[in-house]
Length: 226
Length: 103
Image (tube, rainbow over all chains, first blue to last red):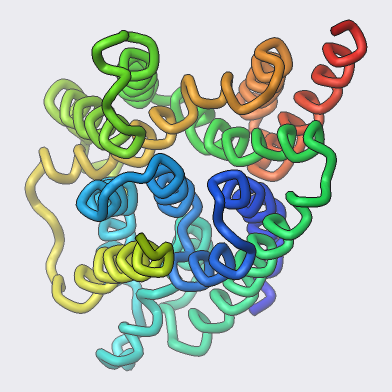
């Protein structure tokens, strides 16, 4: 459970800015909290909020979630190799719910095989922090001066940058893939006849295009696979 | 459309993505293309969401650019997620303040 404290604190601050984004998308604090406690995914929720704000359809929403959260299936897959043999099927159903990037990272660094009590302890505080942060962010977003909430808007992007750039510096392939994604996303934003395409669809297309090119030209070595 | 329907669909999809591999698949993925694709997805997706949207997330483009520069520098120095996120945010706030005074 102790391992979850730093994650919970980080989640609280980041979800706070997610709450602000939800508020500007026209969602209430309660809706935001419900979304956070049931989804538990920063990038996925953030993209979902953008689809909702743009009045996108359900199919678009489903596609964005599948693409953006696809990485979790890979993490869940790795997790299967490390779970304690005694973990039963219904216990796996519980563990799956809280498999976020950070929890996965900590779990994989854990020295022993993963038991149900360890996983639930690890997940509990981050889930609380994530949900509470979203709720308070959406509440506070309404009363905070615009300059403060605009600045906090940038936090989530800052976190994304912090995830990608250190890896991109070490791996030229990741750098190229990330650059392709950025280039593609700029096209959708600034090229006139592409501007009509919604946010969610544009993120999906850019992600698939960049990751596919990466997989073709820079296939991952067996060694690199964590 | 009801926003709770959106939330329910999102939660359902996200849960299935996490749950199915954990319960169904017991072996290892062998296909190199699939493995590589899945490896690159998070980076591509996060960057597509960040750029160029981050430059439009503040009232002042200069402030947003400053925030991004600070975030990138700190990230490359190996600072943690929180440090980078907070520093970017504080930078945007301060630069916006200066821009606001001049405007």
